[in-house]
Length: 293
Image (cartoon, rainbow, N blue to C red; front, side, top):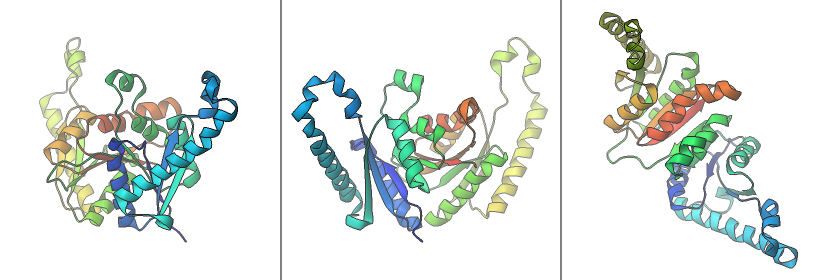
């Protein structure tokens, strides 16, 4: 039985080359097929706005598809060495995020890979990057690929000790073993509420309580590391989770951050996925978002 593929999405720009490289490397490690996809604008829908495309001139659309498809295969072959039956390609039209999600549903990949956003800050703040939106709604794990810092190797996985963090811990341990690198397990202890403290001093926990929490978290992290048979540090860091996780990844020169996200829908998915999306924005390296079932 053929294993589920690694699906990489590319806009054929330079920024997505790293996603292609990392998708190919992942496919090699797990002995899986590689499928590359590219989403074009929906030319049929925009045609009324471009009357010169009507009639005989619309014949350029199939030719454009052919050229873009050839460019997609050529780009992936150049970066990975895969060609012919070693490489699958998908070319589709439509809104980027919705179309990528549909392609993922059709191909059922074990991993969806895409590059980080190049959107302007305001657009990103209002809508979220393509990567963030895909991670929010995809039903498979998503790797947001960035070039790793030099001299990096360690994998970092974040846990809030909830049941939904377990798939991320398991995936991180497996990937660390495949790569032969250490696994750092991190918990962000967010106990400071300075804005609330201005109105109510009781909103800030006493130092003795914070120390007790830190001790309990350290014990749980140590137990988690032993359960995973992992080799690497177990760290309790303080601060808002997304920022603290990204900062720790930078300090540890991590090559990959692994986070979990809840398998929920609607507003709950948006709210509960905010930590993962925040890590995607801030991390200095690639981020693997593991979907809890």
